[in-house]
Image (cartoon, rainbow, N blue to C red; front, side):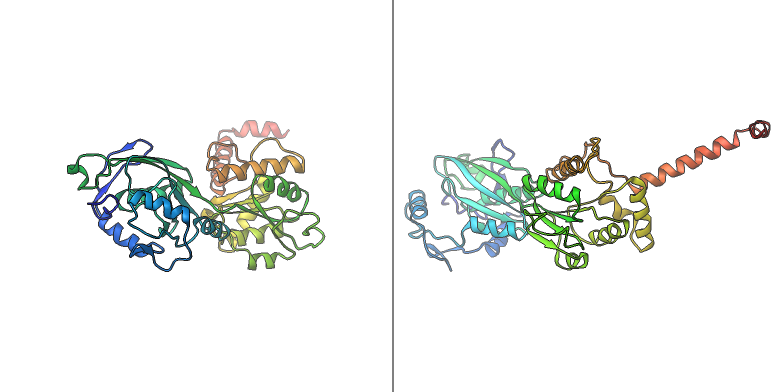
Length: 373
């Protein structure tokens, strides 16, 4: 069997950064059938069907590896253009690149395969069992948002690889493709202007919503990609997703509450609201009366930011930006968040009431009368 034609050979490698040993993989034939339908532009008659143009460099590379088996090497799409499109659309994916080769392999160094979050793919790293294993690893990379290096040896005994013997080895680097995070600021006051500046420098795109045109404008927020001068307009036009972060810093409880009510219905990755713990709990209880459940508030960071003793608007903005970055980098679990949970507040209230009742029952009538004199 020619190397790279083992799409249904039933083999796979364990790619955990160590050298892989190819061994049987159940269901690989199904994978081959699925990818046959998902791949954009399959090899057919020595060229990819429905392609635009060719690349001389790519043709030379593939001819060098395959001995001219494919006379024309053309791309179904420019992978980098697709990555840009995906990031603008808020989509996630993973890019697998062959970064090192040794000996004969079913592809060539620097070949790439893009795996989208829905499992569809573009490009190829040679097909067969290696591509199947990388596809599965790419799905994990998308979820973890952490890169991974995989190493495969293709020179084992035929008894182990059903004929897929190339005599070479290859290293593949799989990296996450993530959309640019977008921070939506509801409220255009002093904290928002400071936070927009800091978050923008940290790589966040900025959107601002305030019902006062004097506060929501390009002069105050020159870095903002979008500005809305009515909350209802923002609710109607903004579509938060997995890369969206919402921070509510309006000028009053009423606006905070309706902004939070809307935010809870979205798929935003982060929702934060400024205010004291007492104010936060009062907003939660008010929204509970409108039909929201206590469980829905568990995803809210309120009071917003990390506990760093911040006092000024700039310091508060730093504490909020730090929390945003921690959530973005999946490292916020061990940090001192200021947020209060409704369940914790209820438990604390019950404990206080129980302690007070216990203290009252232990007091004698005599001592109570003495303290009244």
